[in-house]
Image (cartoon, rainbow, N blue to C red; front, side, top):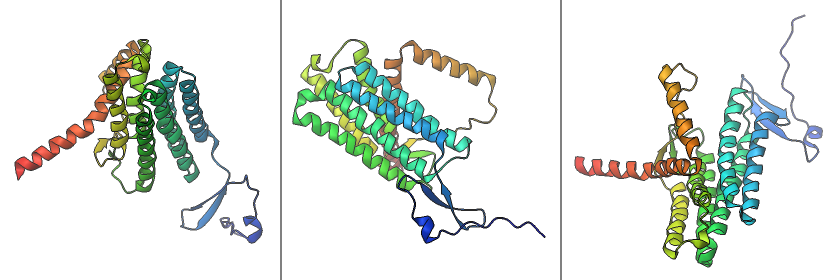
Length: 275
């Protein structure tokens, strides 16, 4: 008697009647047959939950006036956000549930949290204009994440279309972190400085929904061998960042946010010169 591979279970009417807390995800096996998987993967979703909690923690601290902690928490969320996807790929635990959960967490950590931090820190003094600017940023983050989800699998992985929401959050939260580290509160700044900050927040929101391309750096080979000097460069980079985290990180994210428009303008100039 030969051993036959186990046939995938066909869902019956009784199996469709599941408890409301039961998660079933449909997929396909190697032969293209539809299969169902019960439950979710724990490890990558732990990092996603930590990302969500950190974003919520940033919001609470912003409301309580702890802007230094709130802004720093956004950067911690960036680290956690970069880990959940990598952990899922390394452990082969990627799932549609994890992807959706990650997007919702990103909306809180990189959409709502930076907007509330910016509003409570300085934009509140601008009245209705202030909360409108904060909403522009929130809407930009939501649209950016929705567009990204619909383009997964079809877009060029080497580039992001529009500024990624973590980078936009780095610009907004980094500005608040850098000034709060110096003891400067948004309410203490001049009207011109507050307007300039509002323009920065609105610009970050608009860049997220723009068609400007940004390098994603996903084509970097982190598994291959590199020269020994590359490790020294990484150590030097860490040393520079930790010498003054608020201002160094702000400069890095500002440079990255500006790289897209600069590259776009250079391409337009080249096209005009060719014509």
